[in-house]
Image (cartoon, rainbow, N blue to C red):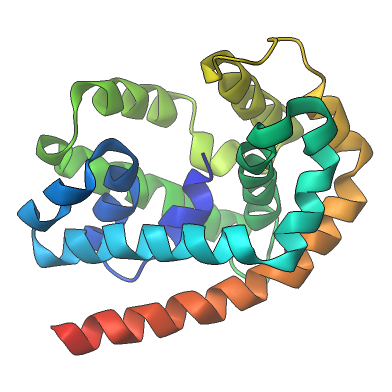
Length: 197
């Protein structure tokens, strides 16, 4: 669900496609795509693996785990997009807007690679400008509600957004401890991918 972070941590348009495609394909199918899309799939997986093992993310999960147990990671992902969107050391507000528009453009130009359910989601994502609006509390509330609605074994009224608001300062610290490490790790992965070309 952390679409903004995944889209930001890319180095080519093909990688943007791969980052979004990863959640919709079987592992054995990834080699059927062009190399730059494959690189995005690889990058997505490397980001997820690094994120899941980072101590700051383990701390952040403690905010949501009492409410949603094993789904805590999904809500941490959403929360991290809020802090990415408000991190002006990465981008200005105008640059984040331009980034969002560019991602929608790239995804629309590459719809042939995606299943129908993603195409439907992309239309909603673009109409409501999910990527840019992750900076807003209401944007994160909307995204967390989507996670609840999709989760089979969770009640739909669990106060995860309230937990986010009540623990925003703590989650900000977790983000500050985590994201610079992820940036460096991602740059290293991309160098390795380029050496393969």
